[in-house]
Image 1 (cartoon, rainbow, N blue to C red):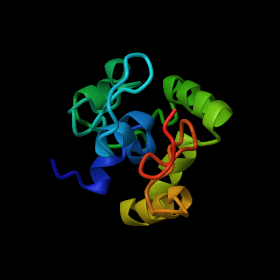
Image 2 (image 1 turned 120 degrees about the vertical axis):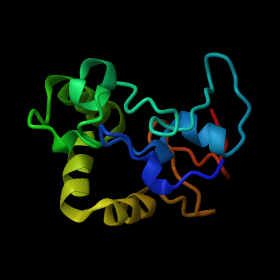
Image 3 (image 1 turned 30 degrees about the vertical axis):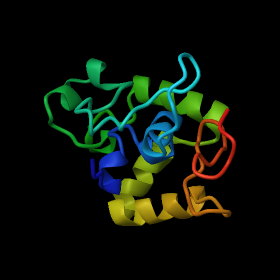
Length: 139
């Protein structure tokens, strides 16, 4: 399956390309029950956003592509998700969405590739555990 980088940006601002489940799938890391899961990304699976969609009529009905297009941005659910990611992983989905809105998807993707690029092999560093699934040891 050929996936475009832009397809890996979820409506909530998550870059699925730096998610542990996506990286395990894309680098053919074997699944391990309770340890390593596989995912091709929210948009690819037509899930819109795993964390927000089921509670958001705008996403469910296809009225917005990204949360920043919503009049309620940022909603309570997105703020909760953002707070969890800021605390655990040092990444803000709300900041990602502001950057997407202001700079556009191509500039956002270039920024993400630079920020999370593995200095050893050029692969992507996982936001969840700081590992490169291409050249580093996987937990």
